[in-house]
Image 1 (cartoon, rainbow, N blue to C red):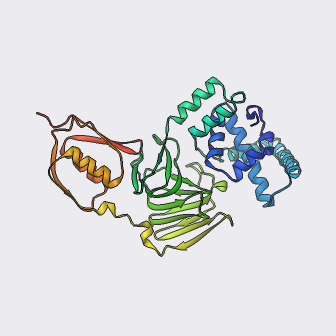
Image 2: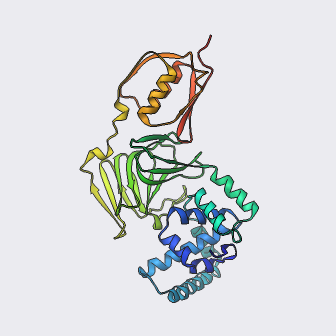
Length: 368
């Protein structure tokens, strides 16, 4: 792999791997470039400007150009940008702001980082860069459902994800920044908590943008399409290669397809097209586990937590010795998982918080 540390904007825009990463992004290329950006000062600006050049070239011709023609066209576009850069100050300021409206996809894969390190030890990152990367990857969590049953994950913002068999979700330990980003491979149902920041689901060649709603995304790599189905609220679905998240102060429209209750969009990978339809099979967005009744009569709370673990496929961490003497009398019918856990915690004077997709229960117990 080339030594991208010395690459200029022009070098990046002319590089075949970089262009492929921009136009046909995947989790590995996203991980590589995000790590590269964070490993050195000034790299984000180089990346964003080179990325914009690639997109501009693609939008202008809409077809695969010979390599020699790509090299020539990149030079032409850079020449035009240089002309704009020497224009009056008002125009230059606008261009500067435009560059920074381009947002990079934040997907950091620890496995891919290690692959790069093993296969390119001489061209790899310095000790300091590796330490920075390791610190970042510690903040990401990956959960894969290898069972035959659905599993429940609770994210740091209290959003709930039902992960279906054969699926994987990658998410940060704690959401930060101007948006909440997760990456899905497979099939999952999302119940997103509204907190003022957009929630972004990267799945296959699509990005689903939401604020607070319930929807399902199905995006297995082997499938010919990606499906997004809405149960309630409103989401917008975009092609990943075209998606740019505007700043909160900006009100510009983002190209994409808007969906509301009982609507669906299908992204055809072969045609590179989004098609909106009415959702006719409502079973796709039906979640029944929250309606399952539970009755506990003088039941040890440790058994209650374990039953909830089995029912929802979620990890509940607690100290069995601390809560060994706690028993409860309660019943549940239509309550959600969060409502059930909260009710139990109030009964035993405990608290809970999301952690790594699961729940951690804390308290002093019920001993005398």
